[in-house]
Image (cartoon, rainbow, N blue to C red):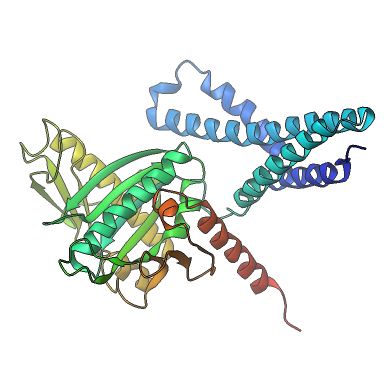
Length: 376
């Protein structure tokens, strides 16, 4: 007789119902109607900033609801198929239900991670900066490897990315880079990556093929729509330097002094942009990124964070890492906070970060729950 999966289906249905409550699905459905009405207004794009806010929120609400609705529909189909399999004693249909249940459980596990993102700015887009630390040319190569890893991760999730600045090393790699990641909960996920990352491998730059340990700092801040109104940048507080773009590029790169570096004198924060074609565009982007970083510093209100973000390369060395990537003498990536590890280093460096991110998010949730539990 075909195996019934009714009990398991009921469990997954209950899980989905709880997630619908946690994600405020009913509230989102009401908000969707409001956003659709606003988006239909003929004069919406008279105010481009407001229009961008509305359309971004609309897209995110639609995606959240579609995710829950797809799971509900899938469970409906599996329940019908399970009943038919039982009535007709159809083993192949029962196997199809089992396979479908496995997919539903995996999707619900991913949905559970989304419910862990309860931070103030977790839904925001993110600006990521990577700075090479100890390790010389290997560290610069490592910074470039990390940039590729995050860009591939974002691509796999369907997120948009834009690289604003890349400062190339003399021999190879990147001294630093800054890029934006746009998509639902981008900051919530990538905030987990903030910290020092350590690479151990046989150096491709060492003629004697010796093992090299390299470090890079990953800095992540949220993009806040209200930053322009909140952050005032008096002219006397900033220094603007213009220089020629470095590294590979098209016709407009390396030919004119269009790259812009903006220094915030009171804090020492430096932001560069060479991605756009004109000096004016690069300055506008650099000012925007600087405001985002200043807003984050204001929010954190901690001097040690300020020191870490100034230049981004202090103490980027032994003993400061949050995660280690080992390619020799064995293969392993281990997060030192969650203790999650994997032997598939190549997959991680190709953007397969979800398990590491999820493990750290779960650790944070457990830690917060323990902190709230009264001791007896």
